[in-house]
Structure formats: structure tokens, C-alpha cells
Image (cartoon, rainbow, N blue to C red):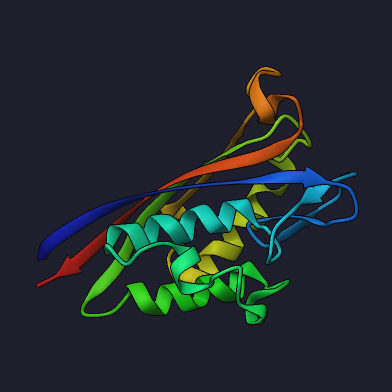
Length: 162
């Protein structure tokens, strides 16, 4: 019997720059630009981690992995996500599901979504059918529409059994 539920929302944004790999959901996506950040700048995984931490009222990824700490320079966000899973999934809490939307004008992400879902399912130890990832453009409006950056929204449900 479920005795408690918590919902978390995460949002992350990174600037697109030349000379960086574009990594989303742990997938290296061919593109002329990548995301700028202290770690690998995986905007999708960062939003999911923030949603999970938020659902437990445990701060955000900046609190746990500050960009002022050289330990996290160039870090693989999927490795950080494993640590977040271990922080959040304690005291009987488990991940119910996650719904993620990536805002990006380019490149086309549809061919990569299944691989992203598989990576998140493996890292967060949940069934693939509990992870939704969608991509949308913003019709060439705003910083994402002008291809200056990418953003991601993530919503997660945490459950605690009796």
C-alpha cells in the first residue's frame, strides 16, 4: 500500500557552443555544437536529477555537485545521477515515473530518444515504460528557437510504500 507520494519538477538550461560534445540522457548526439557546463552539461539528466532532489526537498544538483568543486569538472552526468538515485531512494522511497521534455530547435532528437530512455531506466533502476522523453522546438522563438541553447523540464513521481 502506498502511504506517501511526492512530485518534483526540474528545469535546466545550457548554452550551445562549438568545441563541445552534445550529450543528452547520456547519449552523444552528432551536432556542430554541444552544451557548455562544468560537467558534461547533460541538460536532460540535470533536470531529472533536480526533479528527484526537489521531490525529497533535498536541494538541487548545485548543492550536491557545485561547479566550484574541481571534482565535478567534466563529470559524466549519468554517474552523478546514480549518486542522486542513492540519495533520493532511501527510507522506502522509490521512483514511480518521470516525464521529460527537451526544448531544442536542432538537432532532431527523435532517433535518440529510445537510447536516452534506456540509459535513464538503467541508472534509475526503473522500467522503461515509466520514463517518457519528448522533444519539441519553440518555433524559432527565444534562446532555444534561435539555437543559442537547450532547456529541459522534468517531472517525477516518488512513492513510499507502507
